Image 1 (cartoon, rainbow, N blue to C red):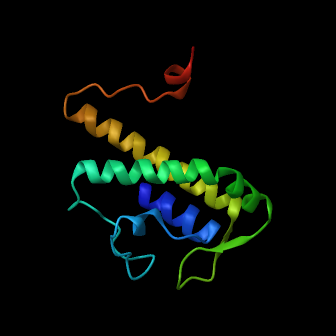
Image 2 (cartoon, helix red, strand yellow):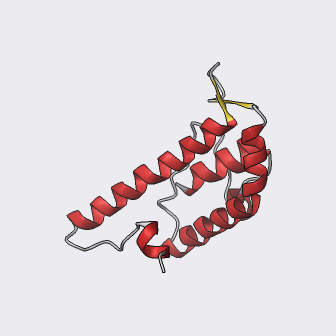
Image 3 (cartoon, rainbow, N blue to C red):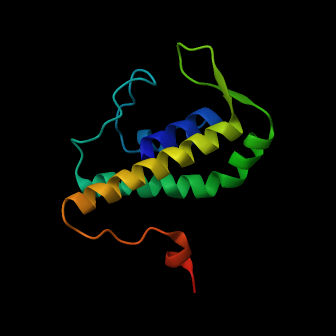
Length: 125
């Protein structure tokens, strides 16, 4: 999930180097390249994810400006379709929600109770 956020937000919307590269990991040769990181230790993956989240939060005002600009982003290197920057934001958020639900289901299938991920209850005071 972090690589999707990193690639779309930093690379495609903001045109900045990816957080991925800061860790010394080679970027895939193409957007369809292998972004799977199963060979990385969990603490390394968590550090990457936290760095991506921090970069997204820091860049959020600029991301919203890009979304309001009407700019269009190519869907892929070999495809003619484009998405509005606003659609990219929604795509990434939907992607993260979907995979979060998959992780919760996997935890349940392993016989454990996942933590509450409902922001209303996590952030409520």
